[in-house]
Length: 448
Image 1: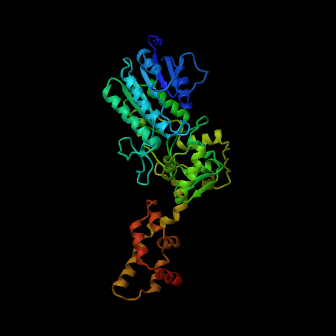
Image 2: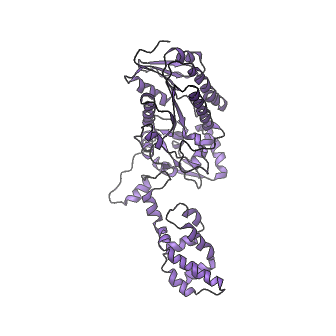
Image 3: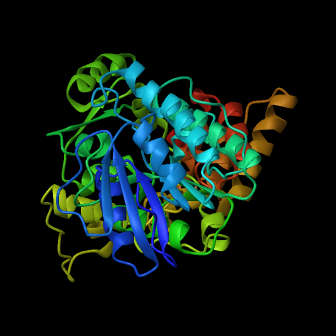
């Protein structure tokens, strides 16, 4: 194995035959800082490679790879070889063997590489899992319940082995990048193929928050971790903002197909035969996942150029052939944004303009809380003294409360609705709704 020329970087990249690896290898070879790139994968690599790139078709436990690490003067190891598709890798057992055992053997060889000074691992936000008890936003330091199976579990075990390597080789700077779901013109993964279906199955009653990372930003953050100043640590990487699943389906111009939760397993099994759709991805489309990227911005110095909504729109336009809808100046701006899915939501899944427009009538519950409190007090006094309420007086007072507020008080779904509206006094309105019987409300409305 030839030594790297003096004064240049020698970088070894695993998983180089995949779209992310191929783009990274090409970008690294185009820089003057890099003298030699070893592109490693267990499948044939593309023939059109720059002169600086030396392809090596070998598995992670191959003697050729071990020799390259020990004798080629490799100073940077970029591990992109963790797979997420069981069927494409020959089954779940083979996938685990390549992901976990292969990483163990790769790190064992890297431990004896004398020139190694930097290790970059491409991990995933799937290590956080997707459950109904998840926090609104995940940070790198938050403890999380490990996924019990699949790609997420493999990614956690791979990260654990890399951290163990970090402790044994303190002279090597270890950077772990937890990337959100990638989208883009050339990305093909189970999630992008999900949106390529004629109709998108969803779990009835759930609208999860999703984050996306454009393939161009994936290449940029990997380049930053490899060629930029060495930074040790774990970093979440995703485009700014979030996209609701309903919004993504609307942007993709696909009809949704709501599936009752008891039947989700049956539908997922059918999808698994064609899309390589794993159970953890089904949970992701039910509960969603959002990660905080502050550390990547402040410590790593990386800010994605594509936000999550813009990255998905680019995917929809380039892969799905969706033509952006041009807005008509005469149409209502909000309706155009609502129909086209062109609204911005924060990390909690809220669009300020959307909430203001749709739920503005509910604000009257807070604005007229004093009147509702008076109704509550009059009814309580009547019950305490065991006298019939003066419905005429109550009706006169209740007329001052907007009709939408009375509907909110009578709504069966009041508790669920008010938990998502910050300005509603949930406790007050719920107490009023419980204290007033349905007969009371019917008679009061009749008097009005």
